[in-house]
Structures are given as C-alpha cells and as structure tokens.
Length: 514
Ligand SMILES: Cc1cc2nc3c(=O)[nH]c(=O)nc-3n(C[C@H](O)[C@H](O)[C@H](O)COP(=O)(O)OP(=O)(O)OC[C@H]3O[C@@H](n4cnc5c(N)ncnc54)[C@H](O)[C@@H]3O)c2cc1C
Ligand SMILES: *[C@@H]1O[C@H](CO)[C@@H](O)[C@H](O)[C@H]1NC(C)=O
Ligand SMILES: *[C@@H]1O[C@H](CO)[C@@H](O)[C@H](O)[C@H]1NC(C)=O
Image (cartoon, rainbow, N blue to C red; front, side, top):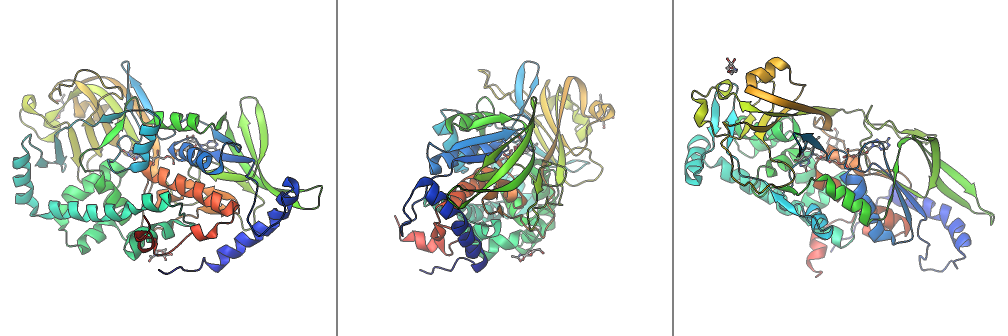
C-alpha cells in the first residue's frame, strides 16, 4: 500500500488557512488547543444555485456538518435549474435533463430516500437517419436487430458495449471511495483515482480518435457514435472521450426518470437538508477579515445578492458555487481576490428543445408509406443539411394508466432537439399537421473541445466549485458526485483531515478494507 504525499503547495495553503483561523476560533469557542483537532463547526455556509448540484451539496453538507450549521441556498430562477418541465395541453414534459442511467447510484438513492418513485422509459423503436435514408431501423424483434447490426457493423456493437462496461466498472469505484469519505481536490485527480492515465487522457482526445484507436470503424463511429453525441450533447464525435463514453452509456437499456419530474429530487433534497432557500441573484463575493475581540482574526466571505426587496449581503464561513461560472452565465463578481478568480472562457453549447403535438411527416425521412411508419425515436448522423439533432415521441412526467404505445404515425407529442429555434417552414416539413408548439432554449452543457483543462474545484481557501466537473462530462449524476466530493472536501479542510484528500491507489488500498 503506497501513500503519496499531499502536493506540497496544497498542504502549505491549508496549513496557513488552518493557523490563520484556528486561533480566532479556538478563543471564540473557548476550546483548549490540544493536539486533537477539536474545532467548532462552521456556523454558516452559502450555496449558489439550486439545481441538482446545489441541492445535493446541501444534502451532503448537512450529513457531514450536522444539524447546527446554517445552510443558505441562493437561486435566481427556479429550483431544479436545468431539470425543468414544460406544460403542454395540461401535461408536463421533461425539457432539460431527462434520463438517468440504472447505475447512477446517487440519483437512485435520492429517489429512494426522498420517497419518490421511478418512471421507466418506454421502449420506442429507434431509427438512424443520415439526411437521405435510414441507415438503421430498429425492429420489434430482438433477433432481427441483432442480425441487422452484425450485418452492417460486424461485432462492433458488442465490443462497444464491453468497452463502455469496462469504463463503467472503473467509474463505479467513486461510490466506494466516497462511502469511505475520500475526496479529490481536482477533477483530474478524481478521474485518475478511478481509471488512471487512461481516464485523464480521455479528456485530451476526441471520442472519435479514442474509438478509432480502439479499432472501431469510421462507419460505425459516424452512424452509431455520432448520433448518440448529437442527441445527448448536441455535438459531434469531436467531444472529449470521457463525455463521449458517458454519452454512449446513455444508450444502454433500463434508463429511467423520476415520476412527476426529475426536478422533484431537487425540491426533496432542499427540504430534507433543511437549507434556507433565498430567492435572489448573487452578484458578488468578497473576502472579509474580522478582528476578534481576543486578538485573533476571523476570515469570512461576504455574499451580495439582489432580491425583489433590494440588494442585501450576508457573511459565510464556506461558499459553494453550484452553477457554471463561464463567461456570461452566472455573472458573479469575485472582488479583490489575489490571484483573481476568473470566469472561464470556454462556452456552453446552445440546445433548443421544442415540443410539438402533431403528426410526423414520414416522407420527410424518405419513407414511402406514412401509415406503417413505426419509429418513435429518430437520431441523426452528422449531415450538415439537417436542422435537427433528434426527434422522439415523449410521455408526460406523470404516468398515465394508458400504457398502450400508440403507433408513431398517429398524432402525439414529439420533442425535437436542434441547435437553433425551429422555423415555421421547418415545422411544416417535419409534420403533416401540428397544433401546440412550445420551445425551451438552453445553454445546455459545455461546448466540448479537447484538449480539456478542467477548472479548479477549490476556487479559494473555503470556496468550492461543483460545476468544474461539467468540463469532463455534464449529467445529473456527475453533479451529484461532484456535490458529494465538495461536501467531503469542505469538511476535511475544515477539520484538517488531509489524509482523506487526493490519496493515490485507493482502489488497491480499499480492497483490503471491508
Ligand atoms: C436539454 C438538456 C438535456 C439534458 N439531458 C440529460 C439527461 O438526459 N441526463 C442527464 O443526466 N443529464 C442531462 N442533461 C444535463 C443535466 O441537466 C445537467 O448536467 C444538470 O442538471 C446540471 O445541474 P447543476 O445543478 O449543476 O446546474 P443547473 O441546473 O444549471 O443549476 C444552477 C442554478 O444556479 C442558478 N444560478 C445561476 N447563477 C446564479 C446567481 N448569480 N445567483 C443565484 N442563482 C444562480 C440557476 O438559475 C440554476 O438554477 C441535460 C441538459 C439539458 C439542458
Ligand atoms: C491535457 O491537455 C492539457 C491542456 O493542453 C494539459 O494541461 C494536460 O496536462 C493534458 N493532460 C494529459 C493527461 O495529457
Ligand atoms: C413532408 O416531407 C416532404 C419531403 O421532404 C415534403 O415535400 C412535404 O412538403 C412535407 N410536408 C407535408 C405536409 O407532406
């Protein structure tokens, strides 16, 4: 068992932080400075953003720091953030993050702990359209699909499945590490602890390069891998290999969602964490030092925010940023930090989700006889003439008793993902007839463009950034994993438990622990 030293710079930083605040706290709390790291809990923690990242951080912080700490969570829009629904003809549909993988254990546990229930995704026949014809049409018969796939791609499908499963196995180590309270100070060290250099290098290559190196054909990549990237991330096979693999895992069976809407998880976590929700826009954060009556100094952060009733500010011991800090997104100003805390230049990718009640135009997809059109999920290859990334029939977030799957040729609710808003002409091409249309435009996920350098998780002494993980891959579960990591990291820093941070060879070490 090898234990590497915590990187010197990091431990120096932590030492000075520790010494800087310990005296103040020790005297304030009247604790004898013994060898034991006895320390009072922080009194106030702020979280900015009440999406799945922020609300799950509140949940894990409450577990770690106990019931006395005050947790404030700021939200300028709606609780849930990118988990949101749209209303159409009296029903609600998932407009943002919609499907969850069966092995996403944090999401699974939240649903269980919060007393929510699971809505399984309906099986729908998928077709892959290349702008001229379907390169693959799924049949209702499993065996026919297998024959078709082997005919066209050999055993690539099986190999892809095994390739993704191998990555998934390694990825799943995070749950064990986190249950033993291990945390990571950078995204790179987190990924390295899961899958070694193989994982960190995936951030610097495209999924296209990665899979070509692994022996997959160009045809397979353009007809199978690219459509998966387009439907999940609105981008091509030029995304980084890590998010690419996450996206391929999203083609597995057994995907699910939360009955009533995925955002219910955020409401549930907020409630059970007993955090105080403050509806307001955080505008700036600045560090404040306060002299103590007894001579020590106390370092805190001042958060300024705007609400309906004006501009206010509060002081906090610890700050968690749970919203992207990319240029033009959260607009939080970090005042007087040196070195400065900057916003990140890389952009977020725009994806437009449009919901349409209508009858799909099968001949738009080169289908002769519209009446036997049975595909309810159409993915697309990277043909530049296409104005859409995908179109699929969707069910409401509340299960109805009607489980009969209507043939796709009849009128139903469709969700289209596209890079730009759909024009009326485009809608008239896509549908033979339609009535209701509702659109939701997102800055949805990072524009992936390897090589990727992940932003820091530790922005300042006691200020942490949950959304740093999105540069590796954006998904609900990724936010929840990052949330738990940040809660553990904040706790270990506060109580100076450095042996729980950035340990190498955790997998080996934990093998011997039961
Ligand atoms: C169209 C679409 C489809 C997706 N599909 C899937 C999927 O199928 N499966 C999956 O796992 N993931 C999916 N994702 C990704 C997933 O939704 C996100 O990764 C996840 O929801 C991000 O959560 P978050 O809490 O980190 O960020 P957010 O949900 O963005 O939360 C940040 C919150 O901070 C608030 N905020 C921002 N600035 C301020 C400020 N200055 N002051 C106060 N509050 C502020 C925002 O209003 C927001 O509510 C999808 C995303 C989109 C957009
Ligand atoms: C990936 O590229 C970034 C930026 O070019 C670099 O800083 C980093 O060290 C590279 N990582 C690996 C594992 O090669
Ligand atoms: C359907 O698609 C075809 C082929 O793109 C197009 O010619 C036609 O105008 C579309 N609309 C209707 C209502 O058929």
